[in-house]
Length: 123
Ligand SMILES: [Zn+2]
Ligand SMILES: [Zn+2]
Image (cartoon, rainbow, N blue to C red; front, side):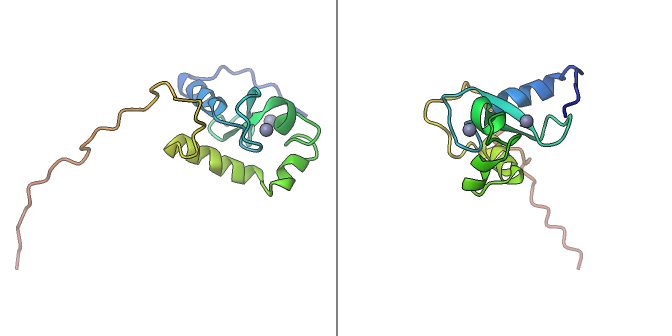
């Protein structure tokens, strides 16, 4: 049963969803079939997993079906969520085709201010 959640996503949520969908399917790792963002928790857009629509998501053997596609790979939703977050965070296992459009939130080089060494020993 699905509840309609028609609340509009805020900017950060839709940005996150877009990033999730740009990843390969978390189950079969396809990059050629359209992916959906599968919500592991109702209404929580930050715990979503990219799953190819036809098979791993809405297919008979997908996550909403008998989950056979997950089982053969020994995957649970939690595993896939874990994988998803790892991809988003560190981009390991990037598909070669997605030379991602510089969505690299520029990491400030020296975040840590150079602290002058305070040699204040109070002995
Ligand atoms: Zn898939
Ligand atoms: Zn779903």
